[in-house]
Image (tube, rainbow, N blue to C red; front, side, top):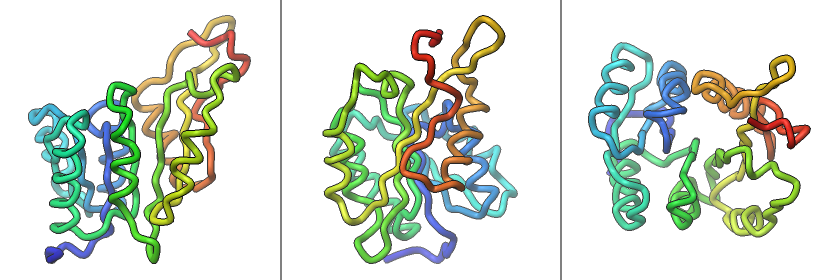
Length: 194
């Protein structure tokens, strides 16, 4: 049974690191935000930081490399806060099954979840196309799949990686624009990457 919280439900994987700002911004927008992370201390600090915002942060202390534990945690969060309608998913390549496992358990065909898959800049490398990834997500009718590619920043004659604040701001801009693919920063020319 869904709890009494009637706020829209969002999921953030990576919300205590580079998506810290995005997690707080969603709580500011009134979402009940379930945040997956391994470190309980960081989760608790994030939840405390969100105290007093219109929405709320709900820690999910689980290692997403344990797919079964992740699935169980997502099911518990949805039982408590309702269907997940927005997902910001940053998962390292060490857990290749996790992004699809999450995608299969959010939204529904009647109310698809907006699923933002956040990928490192290497996915923009023209020598590494991955049509299989997009095709796998395209088979799911319970999500609207979006890719957010994290690039870099060119400054004068050099370049640097994006800061966490720039990443969070770029991901939120991608959520607002709701396009199939968004690049945060730049990825071209590719040889300029740091």
